[in-house]
Amino acid sequence: MILPVTDTLTIAERSRLMAKIKGKNTGPERAVRSLLHRAGYRFRIHIRGLPGTPDVVLPKYRTVVFVHGCFWHRHRGCKVATMPHSHVRFWKEKFRRNVANDVRHRRKLRRLGWRVVVVWSCQLKRPDRVLAKLEKALRPRSVRYARTQTPLAIAAEARPVYGK
Ligand SMILES: [Zn+2]
Image 1: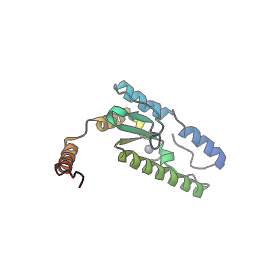
Image 2 (image 1 turned 120 degrees about the vertical axis):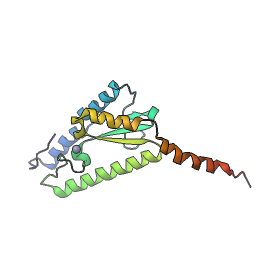
Image 3 (image 1 turned 45 degrees about the vertical axis):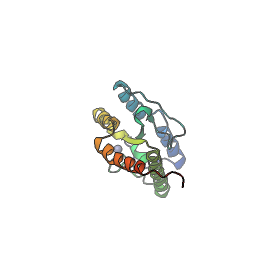
């Protein structure tokens, strides 16, 4: 979706429009879910209590998926991520907060041991590529990961310190 560059809407009107677009169960979210579903993945949606309320949660894979609108979440280099020409300061601040929240949520989730995948709505023009990206993320953790993690775990257990 391409938004008009000349902003003829008032802030209130645009906010309402954007809220509609941002709302849950949008087309892009549904598209990602149906991709996953058809590929045989089982998932849950909108689990409250997880940072940022991810759009899709795959508990078995300890993976969450965010489906981001390019305009709202500022997809870098994307032609959809235009800057409205009026109320620029308002929009800049709004976008800054959105992006900062996204970063914070991803960090928190990773700290909790979740793998985070972001799908941009413009990428859904190529569903095959989105599915490939998701399947790559849902593959079992790589050997390299296991190698770098295991010795540390062993080392940590090798010299147990029991109460002095
Ligand atoms: Zn985009």
